[in-house]
Length: 452
Image (cartoon, rainbow, N blue to C red; front, top):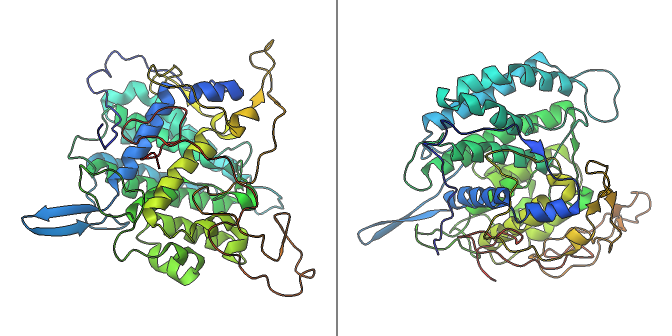
């Protein structure tokens, strides 16, 4: 099987194609199971793996000489196409609109209501912004594309942002890829521009919104989550530090780029500051240091767990991809808001296998069969364990200073809490998930690159 999954483009069929306004389809747990066996799921996973592979370091052979090319943030080696440059301009214009919606100075408990003003500005100018970004041949696609773009900035009602909104931006980019918005080039060139030139700039915008408007985490696991808001930068950032490959090689599942920083460096703020301008993983961790105080192992125990992995960034990258499947694509609270149209179709993938039953699906909500749009109710099921990195080793003892996963009041502890051993912070873990061959992701299974 091919080692590089590719999301097929649909150039030549835009004219006469019937675009649709994306609509909600996921109302309960069985709908999540259908999604995991759908064409839309297949396409999302394929595109994510395609972007992931593009930023893996490469071996360049010239006769008997072999050099290694790496793809870093803010690198002069990354050439931005006109399409990528227009998307960067779009994001820059969105950033400038923040000046027209300064944060409200009144008392508040959750979120800043001025985020709604900024969001309304985007809604009002969306058609104009897309006109400046898209070619005329995609004029009819604006409503469908705009739904994913608008859904990627957070909720103006709940004043929150999370991985579901991040997924919406990934879908926006995937739609553009399907519509042949990005020029054809040698493998990896456009994808690297998308990851390092567009997606990272999107994260810059999102982090600005989160800090300025005090957006709440959407669907966060709290201290037991990987990150309050994002997961994709950890996938792409770990890929940047994987062992170098040739184009025909499989995606590595262990090892690291020579001279790559150790995974343990994320627990040291000075080392994070050193790497954040070149690597997406460290850039995401730097944002955590910017918005959270206290010991890293205490406010980010899962990332601390992962920092103890000894098998290298390839192992971390593989685990992050599995986590994306389990914690984003398979979770009702996240994907219930994802809409489906003509580009991400709500139809079964004929090659998909039925997703295996897991503790995720057994505790998903159910709706009243007498009312197809009734509010969901939670199906009784086994209690979910706290989120743990399944590849991070055996769980370690709960550190001093934490009581049942909650930080103990400082006056209760007799002294400063010592950090726990890396490689297993959580007191419980989820059951292992089956792996998925990267060359042809199968819905209902986590997108891994090897069987082990």
